[in-house]
Image 1 (tube, rainbow, N blue to C red):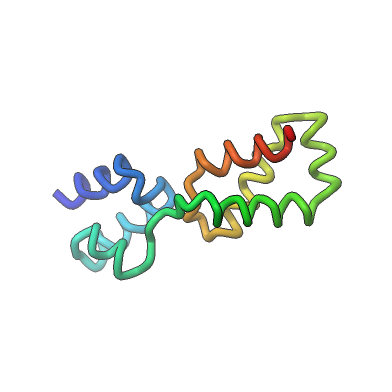
Image 2 (cartoon, one colour):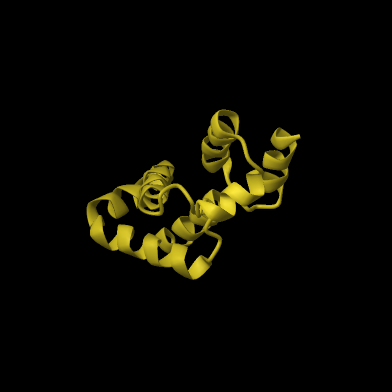
Length: 107
C-alpha cells in the first residue's frame, strides 16, 4: 500500500525518482504514510520555475568555460543539469531543469 502511495506521489509530480528512493528507505525503516513524511520532512519536488531559473542562471554565470563547451557540444547540457540538481538538493523537477538549461544555453 505504501509503495503505491509513493508511486502516486511520483505520478502527481510531488516527488522525483531521487526523492522516492529516500522516501522508500524511510518508509521501510521507520514506517509512516508517504505523503505525510514528504510534507513533514520538506521532501517535495521544486516545481517553481522562478526558483529553478535562478539556480540555472547562477550556475551558467559561474561557469563561462563550460557554457562555451556546451554550445559546441550540446551533450554537455547534462553537466549543467547535474549542477542545478546538486544546488537544489536534488529537489528540482529534472524535466524543468533540462528545458530551462537548454533554453538558456541556446539563447
